Image (cartoon, rainbow, N blue to C red; front, side, top):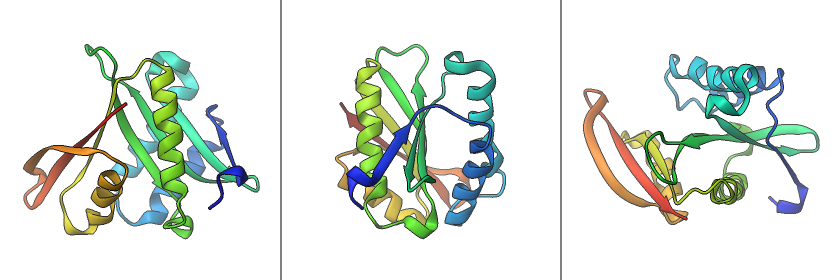
Length: 162
């Protein structure tokens, strides 16, 4: 996907609650209970603004939101940020949009004084493309906690130094 066709926006709009649900659901990667959490972070941003600690970047092409990231500062750190979500609608995966959105997210975090970004994902086999995505984008694997989410589903923690 060509970067010049993508419009980025950071403002969360009421319709984004529905859009986020659609994007996250389309991937078939997340547990049912995770989907409302993705929406709740956007709701918190709508209601509380920046004080919520949640920041968003939406990637739009031809007026349609195809992907988004959500990130925020880690309390009690100097320049630490969490990457809570980065999701591309399933119909638009493998086109390079996620990489472009991730680069835009890195830029935003750096502008906010971020030194590093922490990304967490599942260790299950179906998340192998996600783990490869982080490695391909110069994240280093810093830790793995076996059986974190449930027996047989560990957590892998990646860090990108900015």
